[in-house]
Length: 466
Image (cartoon, rainbow, N blue to C red; front, side, top):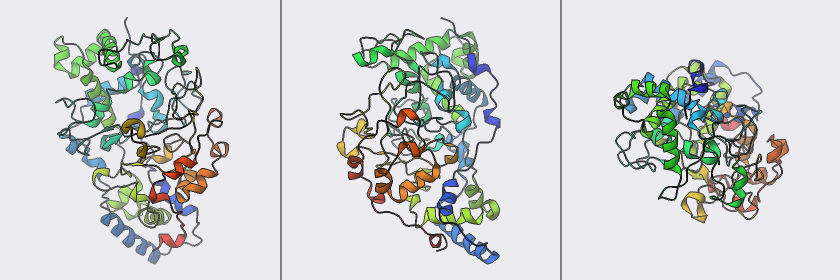
C-alpha cells in the first residue's frame, strides 16, 4: 500500500504565527474578582515593582527559560529534522485508521491543545475545532507547547524522566528502555501515540480480541490493526505497521534520507527516527516569553499594575505557586509536575459507537481513577498532574476532563473546592451536551482532597498589596 504525504504537504504557517503569551492571565483574573477602585500613582507602582521583583527573585523565577533550550539540548535545533517532524505531526498516514493525526487533537488554533473538553480521536468527522464530533476518549488533550521543559508527561504522569530532567537520560526514561538515540523525554513519549487504538490506530481487525463491547468499533475502515506480539501488547506491531507505510512512501524515504545517512544508504526507517523527528518539531514550539518573563528580565512596563497585584497573590496569599511552581525541576512552567487530587467534578461520556470508546472506572463507569490506574494504589485515586499554566488562556476547557470551560470558573474552584464541586452544574459550566448527563459521585473525590485545598482561600484586594 502506497501513501502520499497528504495533509502534511500543505503549507502550514503555524511556526511563523506567534502564539498567545497569556500564560499569567490567571493572575489578572484573580484580581478582577475584587476590582481595584482607584488609579495607581507612581508611588504605588514603585512599591509594587520593589515587592514583585523581590518575590520573583526569592522564587527563583528568571524569565529566561526559553533562551536555555539549545544549551540544554547541547546543540542547535535541526531545521530539516524539525520540518520532517512537522510533516509527520500533520499526516493522517501515521495513524492506521487514517482519519486522525497528532494535529487532530493538538490543534494549532488552540495553542496545540484540545478543542473540546474531552478529546475525540478516531472515527471523527474530519473537523479540527469546536465542531469536532466522534467518540470521546478519556481526557482532555494537553498542549504540546513548551513540553520540551516538562519532566513528567500525561495527566496520570506515566511518562517521566527518572532524573527529573527531561534533557537527562542518564537514568533512563520510563519508556522505552534507555537507548543512545533517545536523549530527551519527548523522543521517548513519541513512541506511544501512534499505537493508541482510541486516538489514531483504530479498531479495524480487532473484533473478537478485546471484548464484546468493543467489537462494534471494528467498522472495517482504514488499516488493519495487527494482533499482539509475544508480549501480549500491540504497541510494537503497530509501530512496525506505521514504519512500513513510511518506508513504502517515496517522499518519506527521501525526507528521512536527508536527515539520516543510514536511510540514505538504504537502511529502513526505524521508530527512534520517527520519535526524534516529532520531538524536534515540538522543540520549535517553545513559547516562554510572556509578560511576566519580560518583567523578570527587567522590563517593568511589561505588566500592568493589575497584573503585578495578581502576581503577588499568585506567589503569596493565593498559594498558587505551591502546585503551579516555577523553581527547580519545574523549569518556570508553572507546575510542580506532581500528582494531586483537587476535587475536580467527574464528567464522563456514554460508552458506545459515536459516543465514547473508553470504559471509565467504577461500577457506574463514570469515574476516572487517575494515577491509581498506573500504580494500582487506591491512595492515588483521583490524582492528576498539576497542569502547567503557560498559554492557559488559549485553552477551551480546564482540568484533566475539561469540566470547566471558563478560566475564571477554574480559578474560583480552587478557592473553595468543596463548595464548587458539590454545586457543580455541567450546563452552567459550559461543557458539551453529551458530557452533561453522567456525573460521577463527588463525595469519594472530596474525601481524599489534597490538604492544600481543604480550607477555603479568602482573597481580597489587600492581599495583593501586602
